[in-house]
Length: 179
Image (cartoon, rainbow, N blue to C red; front, side, top):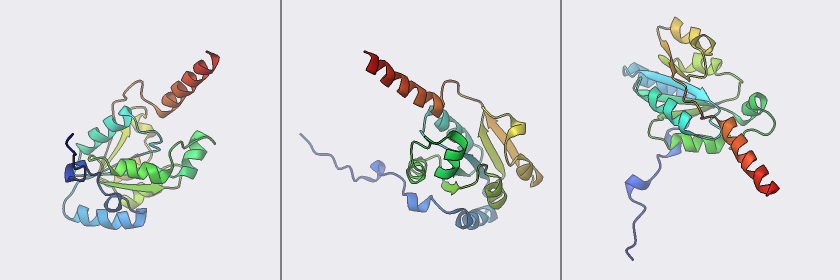
């Protein structure tokens, strides 16, 4: 049997160290990119269990500009928003997963329950949210629009949610225990 060389460049994940920055350092990187005329796109979320709905939103967001920045809620923030059993996947792992995606240029973690302060700091030209949000409910909308930017709501992909995945997993295990 022929051995394959999996160290080939096409098999490697994108290095997290070049994509993941604390908010203040990322703001400096983005200022430089903005100075080069790059159009900055921002989206955020918990991204607890990455699923097709997330991938759809990220790929649509990437197409709207030159640089896609993803803000993820810290573990403490997810716990406050989603409950004591969440997150399922720790923030460091969620950063690694998102940073490995070609669509994502930069990832940062924010500890607040909303990304408003992060949006003020990073000053994206385009703010993207998934279609489960109405455009009026998008946090940071006013900040982005006041700076001449726009808010884009990507159409919702029904049937894809982290909570739904967790519920399906629990149901499978409950049914297995009954059998």
